Amino acid sequence: MNKTIFVALAVLAIAGLLWLSFSKMKKKEELPAVIFTKDAPAPIGPYAQATARGNALFVSGQIAIDPATGNMDTATMQQEVTRVMKNITAILAAASLKTTDVVRTTIYMTDLKQFGTVNEIYAKSFPPGSPYPARETVQVAALPKGAHVEISVMAVKN
Image: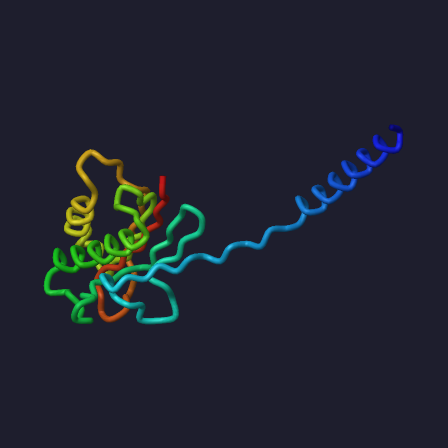
């Protein structure tokens, strides 16, 4: 009987040591998932439309490129911002997210005198009564392809 208890204790001790050694092993970090949809313009440089890590999505800055034609939609500021938000919404949808999941935005503009127009269209992109994300808006000297506005967002899946 003593031999049986000794063997059982030895097996438990070995199992415990194995568990400790495996539980302390560093887990490999998962690489971010790359999000791509044909419903938004393909990147014009070495970047992804968006990357996801865990439940967070990081959407690259979007300009008013129409994904169907590849042309810029800059006839008016209203059209430009509307196209940018459509592109963002398409990328969010590709990651199974909505604008209500957006927690932060950054807006780059070449002329802050257009802030009211940008703000009006931007606000319409979120459902009435939903909380707006945190945001900063900055004026820059120039944007890619002659764009007047570029918007990037971060979203978190609840």
